[in-house]
Length: 53
Image 1 (cartoon, helix red, strand yellow):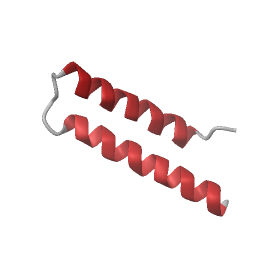
Image 2 (image 1 turned 180 degrees about the vertical axis):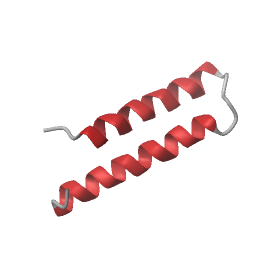
Image 3 (image 1 turned 120 degrees about the horizontal axis):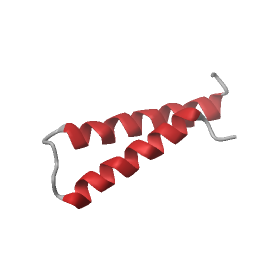
């Protein structure tokens, strides 16, 4: 079953890509989405590998 963290991470990655494609970035705001998405995906991978959560 797909975890909620993975879904949120994927959605944030898609939003980040759309922000890069549109060319109208909000300074560092678009990169904050990338960082949050990557953190959530890493947490999901670690929790899936270690069965912590």
